[in-house]
Image 1 (cartoon, rainbow over the protein chains, first blue to last red):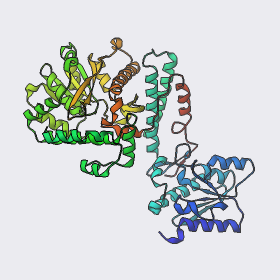
Image 2 (spheres, helix red, strand yellow; image 1 turned 90 degrees about the vertical axis):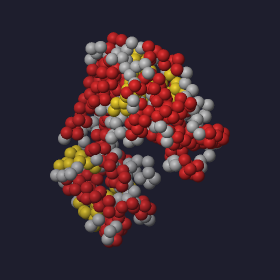
Image 3 (cartoon, rainbow over the protein chains, first blue to last red; image 1 turned 60 degrees about the vertical axis):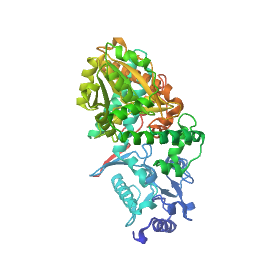
Length: 215
Length: 326
């Protein structure tokens, strides 16, 4: 990959841009060893998956904004936010269906953050209140270009979690868990009206998954 | 079995108590174990010394090598020589006026237990060994080959059937005619078609096929488990307690039939667990099973709350936003 467009170059350019014009900024960067240990990182509030050192979860940053303690510079490791509870915006692409995190869109549209998204061909800049579809396109391009980082991209293997196929598979497991729990609980007792209702609701979940598969 | 093989197993038996990993031994036995595998084996059945696993693997290897070289007569003689089973408990199978399903897990020398049991029962009543077809279950060619070598003459009374539509129809017909079906419920083809039963401190995915066969044919189930005999090159088949499908089950709505199928399947696995609890490292699926987290099913009281939480969470809840970028 061209060195000029490495994630660290993106970080340096974004830091410089923030120094020149003090606009609230979200920088979307891939998770690599270099983007986790750069000396300029303390200037930024970092958002990603919960439980990682130095990383805040999206809701923590939003809470700070609501309490009027706005972080001016935010790095979003959107590649870490791929689990069902973190990636809740569904994106229909020509060849697949995936889910993206909403934090970048919320910060851009509600809190008027400028968005700088790292891609292999440079930083994509989206002004505050950009259309959600433009933000989604930029994030899709970002994730696509993260692939070029090969093994340096630490979140590579986890990206399957944002696919519809993975979610349906996980949903099926949950439904089987519920069905098994139900059968285990009622194995020795007759089904009353309440139990039948519970079973109807479990069936509804199963039908919803079938609907997702057909869609 | 050669004297050398028996001496080797006897001489290495004290190593069963050693809990030291040896890559040299693993290489000699042709084992490919990661650190995670070692941890999972140790977890099985409380705290299994890794030496016990090596010793078991050695026995398995020696038996497989010995049997491969033998013709029918000598292979059956070998199985008989290794067999220390008390078959008194098998008499009700022979005497049963209805079909019988013998359920056996992939534990210890299960192939030898199945061979010895099928050979005995086949003298009295037709026996059908039911398993996944080799096309979809890697490794099951061994059953086809063994049947060809050991039981191919029609007089043996032992036949095989694969878990496809044809095999299932044959199993149902046979059981209705009072035949015996040997089945391994701890294997499945499609995870989505399974239910989860509590087993050895984890949840086990299993098909309800054994129970469904019993329900549809009026057969009873006998769980059996192959076990090592005194850690020599020998085995014994442990017979569990007869399980009858609840009597008033004909004409049940599909939902209730499924719950009964589940209850019977759970009972089968409870019996397996009692026999395997202290030697789960002899089970073919030990590593995969203990790699699962120690989850438990939720009870009747907690079920509505858990269901509601799932209904309001992804993937069942609608996404926050849906964008069409096609």
